[in-house]
Amino acid sequence: GLATKGYPSLYCWSLFMPSRYEGPLLKSHLDADAGIFACDDTEVLTFYPLTLTGGAKGRLETTVVPSVPVGRSKDGTAGNALQFMKAWEGISGAGKWQHADWTIKVDPDAVLLPQRLRRHLEPHTGQKVYMVNCAKPYMPEGPMMFGAMEAISSAAIAEYFAKVGDCAGGLPWKAWGEDLFMGKCLEKIGVQRANDFHIYSDGVCTGVDCTDPDAAAFHPKKDVASWLACLEETKHPVARPTTEAPQWFKDYMASYTS
Image (tube, rainbow, N blue to C red):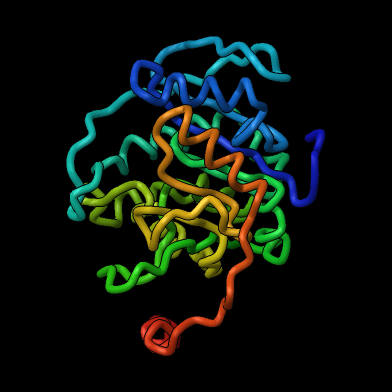
């Protein structure tokens, strides 16, 4: 089982490249016992074996996954669907996901608040579901799960591990980013989507604001100083005047819900 810090239990992981900006970034999270290291269990994936030291954990051995070439997606982002299929294989093999209510993939440049995340996920715990976190207007795919924080329930990720072959063989994923692939795959194999557009504050979606009182992740914060400054800002949230969506947004969303 899993020694839990709260309910629902969270197993959080990141794939990181130590030689890039992500190296000192992830080390600062470990030292601060923050981000993925504040979840109930953690996995750090790298392309070669590495021992991380610091924080309450003391030592952490990374899980090695193969590196594959990454092209460009149709949206001009990294065409990294295959790379993250390999990463998810590493998560499957590590096996810890079986002991957690949710598996959470987090980019190293996202500031994660596990305690807040639990509040968003609790109503959906026990369901076969993944969280759609971005409703940026006029995306060709409509609202989708943006990849800086992917929250997938235990039953949903079990289904993915059992049936990912159906997606790899049946979807035109080579032109996709990993987050579009993951969303399309989960839907293809019968996993439900749950919309929560307050779960996440992302500059790539509708803007990042570290004083947002509801968001459980903030992205992008690509250097240690801005990541830690955002973490500090989250401790001083600013109430929002209204959570009522404007009418144009309701109309736009209505076009995606039957």
